[in-house]
Image: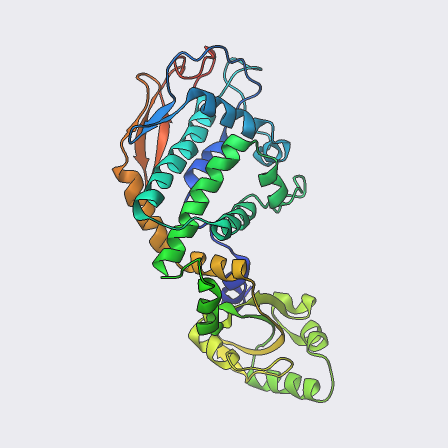
Length: 356
């Protein structure tokens, strides 16, 4: 794929996770457990976050919420998902990955309250959409849609995941100075149509301006753009009639956005030189987004700023773990629970549970 196609496709098809829960999710995907053999809790809490307790009961429920989601365990694949003790034992790294998400949720919930951010049905819907996308897989084996994977989690772990993403959504809207009340999101859309209205765009790519001129004349003579793209375009999108998807054209690089911003549906753009190739576009349709669509776009635009703010809150959080159960440490740009080198017996009542 040429650079221009990559930039165009990325502008809409690649939805970033709003907050980098990636480290935590990576732990969940790389290790797990098979079954449970929990008895009475041996410690009074799983963690404390600025004094707020995450109970061992909640921790155990969250672990089971993940395990009994069969669509999720399909995504885990053929990995070592049980402790060294075999069937019925936990992997300590899996359990600590779950605990990391619970700690993040607690810290971010406190931050939202302190900053007096607005969490609403709208931010919940934005969070749900972004979460569903994060669980969407291109696997031919695990074909469950991301929203169904999310819906299959039990309530404790699903609530924690939603809490993390909803905090990020509320902060993203706040950073953009957009209110969730009094139609604030759609008022923003009305003032920023170039950022919120979606154009469904198709492209033809040719090696020379002369070659593109020939293609243009064929279309002007009556050949459909999609047909011409399939026949003449050197872009990989040619087989799909040149279709790139629907996105806000203002998110494209300036040399591509400018010719498209006032282009009417069904009209051809000028020929645009780009990275040694020549491009011609057609807008096949325009879509006017819903409130959730607009809010999601705003949150994505503010994602990096929101992440920095929440990272600072996480860095300031006083996280306590019961003695001998692990530590709360920084890994790269994020924090996570790091298991002890041996069995986490006092936290997870499973003597055979060890760090892989």
